[in-house]
Amino acid sequence: DKGGWSSFMAKEISEEPEAVRNTVLGRVHEGAVTLTDLEPIAERLQEVDRVIVIACGTAAYAGMLGKYAIEQWARVPVEVELAHEFRYRDPVLNDRTLVVSISQSGETMDTLMAVKYAREQGAQVLSICNTQGATIPRESDAVIYTHAGPEVAVASTKAFLAQGVALYLLGLHLATLRGTLTAEQIAAQVAELEGLPEKLQQTIEDAAGIAELAKWMADTRSVLFLGRHVGYPIALEGALKLKELAYIHAEGFAAGELKHGPIALIEPGQIVFVIVPSPRDARSLHPKVVSNIQEIRARGARVIAIAEEGDAAVLPFADEVLRIPLATPLFEPLLAVAPLHMFGMELAAAKGLDVDQPRNLAKSVTVE
Ligand code: F6R
Image 1: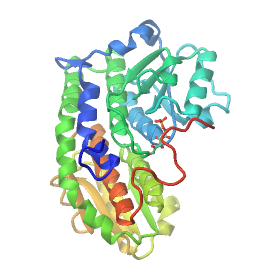
Image 2: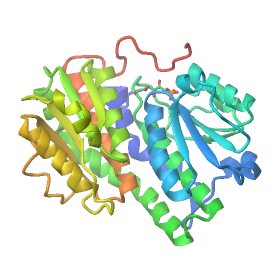
Image 3: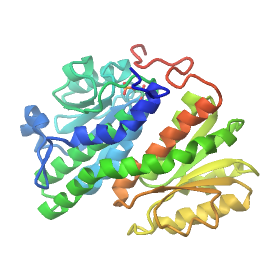
């Protein structure tokens, strides 16, 4: 039931704040993270010296976000790999490796086979899954269920948010175990997690104008997405959504790669979405990305910036600015992604396409 929405996808994007809220619910208490989901692997979790995240598609981009958070908070090395690549390359695993699989459906064949392979090699497998009782969680040592609710539209939206949040909870749990963050630092991150649904709601409401933007772009043949640090997986996610929903050639790049090749693609009229890091970020990534915007603008690109409220530096160079509320850097991508989900959907709708059932795709990929 679409509940009055024009598509399941529209409904599911509107449920993104709730997906986040429900995934955090019961897992944080008074500024601390209590992941009882991890009890089956509690003992071995103490020994973990490496994390490998395996997933496909959108779930793998959520995994990339998790890498930034887990490494920063828990100081444990994290790799992210596509499940179908992982399986066939003879990865080095042992009983101190924590393999984290991510799957909305819990039935993706490549992810399932990678999970089985990892366990055979002695790794412990934790799965992040949105579907109770699916095959992947049954084959795993422990499960963190995302509580996004059923996702019907083929393109994953609210599940992505819930997967990101589940990984952040895992990062805070590991940081607690390893003593890499103080109780105050953890409490500050928990407060960010708890504040996220409201900010996400705000972001979605503020992005309502994106439907108009999508209309004037309906004839576009190619769209590029640039992001840096946690904005990079969001650029990849924005591009994937345009490919699968609007059948438009789209690519996401790490903004720092621009000069190493992609800038050659920029010609007058090329549309480029840029996810702009906060000017408050201690790593000073903001001026670097603003200078990327200047470079592509100088070559005639039309720039749509996703930037935090009050960031005036982008105004002279961007054709459009979509705003996200203030958040700490690791949490910005979980806001910035919502307008991109909306854009993919609106562009598909502007082209008269079936938003919920894009051609050639299935909701759950149970073949290799
Ligand atoms: C993209 C999308 C796919 C899935 C991928 C993994 O919008 O939906 O890329 O994310 O097929 O599916 P799950 O999470 O079910 O393993």
